[in-house]
Amino acid sequence: MLKQDENLSFVIEPELTPRSEQRIDLYFSIPNEMGINPQTLTEESYFNNHFKSHLAYNANNIHLPLVRSRFVSKNKGEQQDYRQNLNLFCYQVRLALDADIKDALKIDEAEDFYKRANEVYEQSEGLLKKLRRYTPDDEKLLPFFTNADNYLSWHVEQSFLKLLDEGPRSSDYAKERNDLLQFCKSENTYRAEKSYNSETTMQDANRITNKMRLLQRLIEHGVILQRQTRFLNSYLKRLVKGTVTAVIMAFVMVVILNARSTFTEVTATLILILGVIYGLREIFKEDITRMIWRAIVQGRPKWRFSFKNSITKDKVASQLIWLEYMRFNKIPKEVKSIFSKRRQQNKQAAQWLHFASETRVSAKEFLPGYDTLQHTLQFNLAPFARYLKRGEGKLYHLDSNKISKQAVERRYQLNMVLVLTEEDKILYQRYKITLNRSKIVNIELIYSKK
Image (cartoon, rainbow, N blue to C red; front, side, top):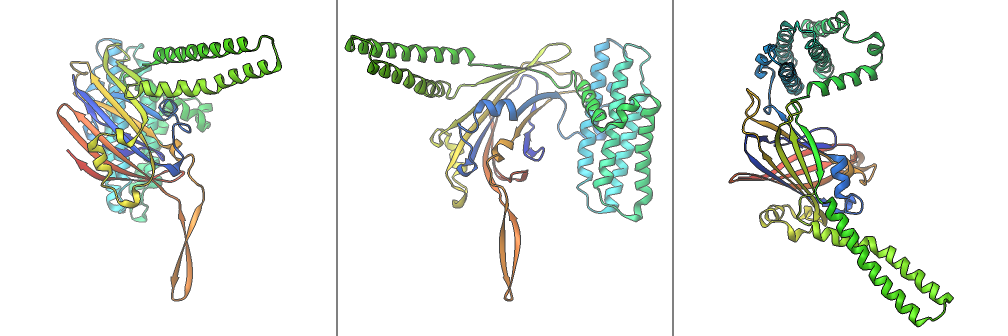
């Protein structure tokens, strides 16, 4: 359900079926020593800069043998149909290859590693041949094929170079290693013969990388659903701000009129009193507005996502997002009970941050061959690590009257409870997330209950 993504981020990837509803609640316990609170990290700032949500046609945990290559053979019909089928195929190949390369790099024994690497090589080569077997004759469709073929060839080459660079090495498997290197060279030569990329682009690492990122976004067209974001309470926020300003101005005018009736002439004292009144108004207006606003929006969804098929423009799903700091006594009893099972040393003073996502799929069916949507929620913890202390400490040991020391890094722990609600089923899970200033060290599932 929950897994680490990059150095300081994690993702949650549930699946959605047609006409389904799903709610995900996350309750973060953030130790006060981390310096995170409504003043240092606002909900709006975190949502806009460190949170991502997207839906895509696919199944989780797809691997190369499961790629539906039949889609790429459908080169008849409308131009958009061909493009979408081609994009679906390329998107699946990329995800499956990334998953298989990641699994292969977990193997430490050289014999098992090169056996698995050879399997991935044969599967990748077969899928590339199937893609090129159905090169379209229509000039209008050829640019779509060229972009996909160029990107997949480059991504496959980069993936295997990474595999060979980071995997175990052994002179006993020089032939297997050489075969994989020849495969990478053949793909590089293939792109050169097709003149997919200019010499100038190939010689600049930044240019070729950015071009491939662009091609990656192009093959995601029609696969990853187009998202539109709407802030739900914009008009209400203006109304609250206007009302508070009107009330404060009315109070200030009453005070000014009373002061004028007391002082019949303009004096220094009157000017000083008026200056103090206007100063107090500016000081307290923002604080009062913020306090009233937080009380009004407590428990309300703040954002709405609408997901549409980027080709047909049909609405597929909608999503409501909650994000707010809250008090511990406002947390549901079941969640509080799970948090109370922590060890005593972990029960330190903390800020409580609540995230909720409520997704409703309106589509009756998905594209042919796909019966689920992959929903990806990405959370970046970089702002959580911003105020963590730098440097390392030292741990001293005494061994036979000899003192030795060992460097240790500073680590912090977040406790988080995940609640997944689907129809009548509710899943509770508690995770312990250990991080330092540069990365998430470990994500550990502590408790799970259905």
